[in-house]
Length: 267
Image: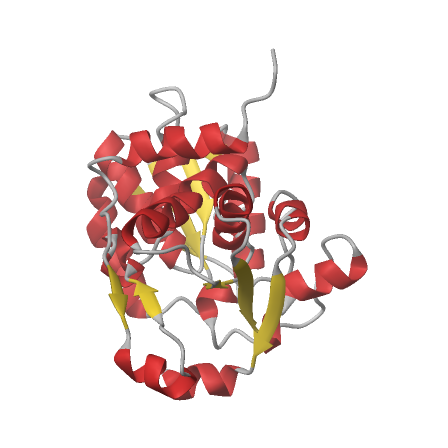
């Protein structure tokens, strides 16, 4: 059997997410447009379930599992919210492991979205610590790991962001700028855009204190960063994904780093 194309995986994810993920608006930002001299538009995934695009990948993954499967995940907070919503919606029992750096409001939101469907554990100082705990829990219990970024099903779910904004904009964008942690959103959108909008320049932006994707591109493979800054907690990942890295590399993405101080100032 021939392998399923990435475009088909994304199209299937679009169908799977219908009625689950919000089709968030694309809005022009007058302030940044004036500052840059460009026409700057935002895809408002902050209005999404769980306040980020992460529900797309989490739901797309869990919805394809055998019913009755227990699931476990590690997250800095955003993926966990999408995972919790997916578990509650699908009636799946799930466990979330978050590091101690995950803000209290995110923990509360995870619990509210998941309700009785999830168990929330706080373990580790970074996302990577929590990922090891989740993997150990899965090995001991037989639960299925739902990766925050490093699985093709997750990547395809995140790529639905690009499907939507290409349809919503009046023209194909010249440049698309995407955040980078482990690379799920960047890998998905860049791969989709390479086929459906090949003239669009794709830029990934990661925190300077956790520039794992840039390090992987330099080394030619994912590398583990010795130290990371966890100020930008949602993107503080020590190592780019084994699945996401080659997709980002092959899509010819430009990756830049932004100092944590600049992130805080803009927020």
